[in-house]
Image (cartoon, rainbow, N blue to C red; front, side):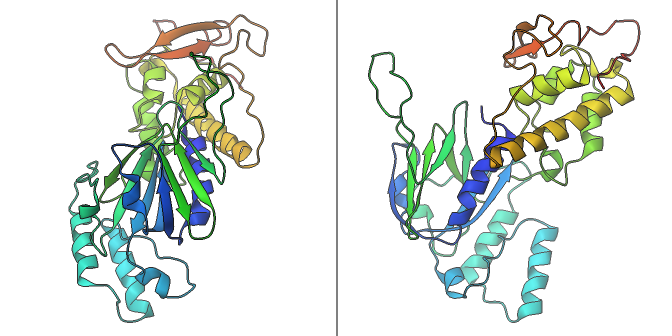
Length: 334
C-alpha cells in the first residue's frame, strides 16, 4: 500500500495541473463517472496521510481573476476567518451567494465526516466546492503524461497493460492517469495535520501518548489516528532502528525508547520522501530481508490486533529482543 511518502510524491506530480481545465476524460471507473469531470477546473490539491484530495470547480471565475495564484479553499473554523480577513484586506469580496451557501454546507460537516457523497452531474452545481478523495489501496499509483505498461504476463499468459480507473486530460496538453485507487466525492477534505507524520504540525506529544498504551507498539504505529501515512514498511524499519520488538507493550517501554521510536518515524519518512522526489532507490534494512545488517537471521510473522488486519512483520530477535515481563525495556539502538 502506498504510504505517506508515496502519496506526497503523487501530490507533487499533480500540483502542476492546478489551475487547468479538464478537456477530456477516460478510465474504467464505474462508481465514479469520468465524463462528469469534463470541463471542470482543478482548483486545489491537498494531501493527508495516505489520501489525496483534489478540488474541482466548473466556475471560471477564479481563472478570470488574472495570473495570481489560486486562493486556498475555505476551510473550517480559524481558516475561514483567516480567508475572510484576507479578502477584506485586498478589497470587496467577489464571492457569490452560491459560494457562501456551499461554504456554509462544508463547514457544517462534523469532524471526521467526509460529508455527503456526490457521484453525478446533478451534484455539480455552479460555484459549489467539491473535493475528489483518492485512496490508493494496496497498489494504487498516479502516472503523468504516460500510461503504465505490463511488466509481466498475467495468469492467462496475456501481456495486457493495466487499465486506469481515471484519466484526466488538461488544457495545457498533459494528462494524469490514476490506477488501482478508490475515488469518491466529499464536501471538504478530511485533513488533520497533527496526526500526519510528514506534516510540520505533527503532534509528538499525542503520538507518544498513543505509543505508551498497554498494547504492542506494532499495532499502535499503524493506527492512522495518531500516525497518519505510516504503513507497513515504515513500521518495520523504525522498530528495527529503535531496537524494539514489534510485540513490546508500549506501557513497558522507557520514555527514551518511545521518544526514539517517534524520532525514527519522522526521520525515516522524511528521508524516504526526499529519496522519492530525487528518484533515488529505497534500501530497507529489515523489510523483506532474510538477514539484518548485522548478519542475524530475520524472523517473519503476520501480526495484528485480535480480529483486526494482520500485517507481515520482519524483525531480528537479537537486535530487537522481546521485552522482559518484569520491567521496562532499556535496550535501544543508537
